[in-house]
Image (cartoon, rainbow, N blue to C red; front, side, top):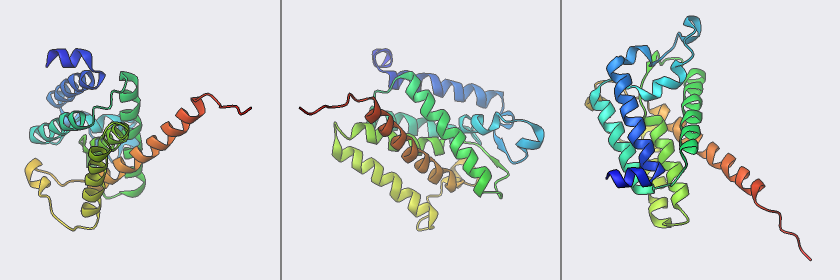
Length: 198
């Protein structure tokens, strides 16, 4: 396992982010979670740090396992910089959408919104290598988000973590992943050498 961590930037990210989330949880999620009055208190960092703390240890365990499964399935092979930029963009984007469209949410904590986005982005990176798994991963995420949005099925996750699940955060994570994928595709095409015809 240690050799895998040293050889893979994906596993190095996992080996760094899970201990960071654990440390923040030990310090206290109340200092880092999203709170509706962040503007009046000037605590703008909560828009980012909310996604790295959890309502409890079971919540952290589930999201930590989810991240391990995500990397195991998709093995995107991203650089540390791409991991960091992608997660930060999704954190800010999800929080911004919560501020804009979910005034009823008074506080929020959890990595699952970002995690949904990482599954989609990881599957997109996997697509050239394993189309079947990539399509299945994306389909699973989209179907679960739709089921949550239209109350087709109660996954009972709230009972497991001891708090109400903000399902819109999962939707926002999916939307942010799509936006990042489009931006990345545009950037990659612009960086490709222009072919000239004779």
